[in-house]
Image (cartoon, rainbow, N blue to C red; front, side, top):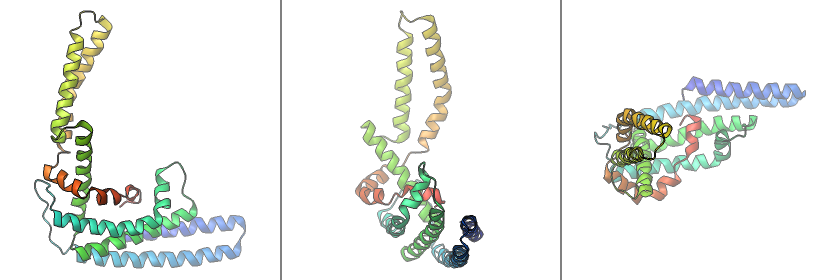
Length: 248
């Protein structure tokens, strides 16, 4: 998040809290809210300054994305070390962050804590990236490949096949198409059902190329799957799905 976004977010928290207290007629509370808000906005600005400086240092580390998307164990371990630091902060604010995923609306207090959590998480990540020598590009590459590989690994477990995502999906399309053709060969098929099956088969044939291409985009090197399974416990532990809800 940009510095101005964080400052605006902090200001919004201050305004909301201030209006709440005003509505209740708590003048002393209003004074305390604005005092707290000024301190938080200043804190957010200072945190953002530190994050930007650390990111500058981290991004001095060169990184070239592997053309085949292959992960190396030594760099994966560095990525996991960064995730471990992020997880340490994330756990402190997990209820407030993940409340945004469910039906419960976050409270005013939650909003303030989320703003604070976002800053602390970004700072922890930036510090760890500097320590481990991971640029933002390399960190992002690992997020993409690790969790794409996790999906491919689960697909293999579910289907019992060791092929790539594209291969597995292609087989499923072929099996579905063959099944429709077998049903169309039934001499007892009603005209209405025949028209419906023919329509489904035609739609499947039209969409097949696009679906196969999308599936191939999820392919990962088999070495990545083996590496992920070796470190699966840590990868699962540091997944932190709630990060997406605070833009991280």
